[in-house]
Length: 63
Image (cartoon, rainbow, N blue to C red; front, side):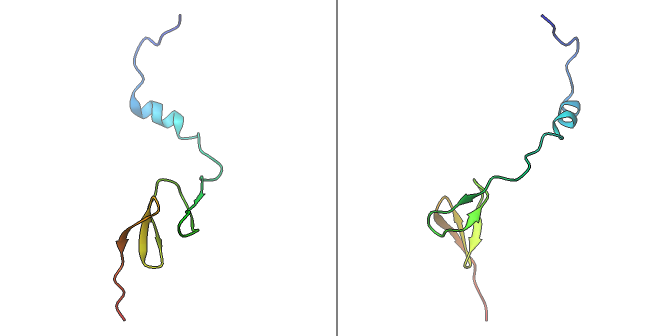
């Protein structure tokens, strides 16, 4: 069985993996707000930050 004689460095491994990219990022629809956003990311909607369908933070608006 073939095994590498020396360990490949992490920078060499990462340089090889940089060319593997998706054509389009995955998007999901929030069941609460209906906003299209990236999965596993918090997003702003109407001055509120949502994560996993819950309000995490509110933005104070000053007029």
